[in-house]
Image (cartoon, rainbow, N blue to C red; front, side):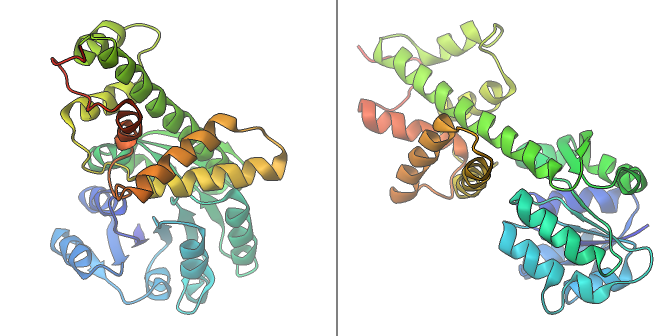
Length: 299
């Protein structure tokens, strides 16, 4: 199958590489020339626009920052809609507002292009090793057609429902991840302020009910003060903004989400917005006047 892939960022680049390794003929487009060169070296072909990617492909995948980028690439000048042809399918794997997914879907349907929304979870490490979780919305028959391609990039792929359902699932995921990270930061700050080694507390509780994938992924980063981005704060700010907008639209109460979103604004103001979301611990450190340090608890 010939595949167009647009968006070679922190997640998109390793996802595209996994498709090349699986033997798909890939046509790539991105604003970052270095990323394009890296994919070309891996075996992909560079194209000059989303329209060219669509014209050359049976399936176009996008992995873009937010709703406006998806609308522009799909419907704008030189976009996917202008490359419409029989048999073309579009899968947006970005994390965007569900209403925008539905808007783009309807506009492309008028051009004969079926669309799925298929956002991902797992961060850069799982994008690299092809074990991401993918939640998919759209026509079930279209999903069945492209599921083998998505499987190449993922460890778990779940069909959730009609168009927009994938992004609703992703918003729920991002709420749980954000609140979980904040709870971990709060708990281990408590441990250190109470004079107990936070590393020892982590080892003591990770196998019990409090343990989670989030804890195992993010607490070691907090303890090592390693905030290299697997998933950046600015992207989580974007996602939580979409969560809150959607919640307001359907009258769903989201008080914990709103609180963590404001905590992320503190990190933005302090210049940490490009760091991994595990740096939420910095907010607690600032309030508690400590730096989380395993083996050296607060007296």
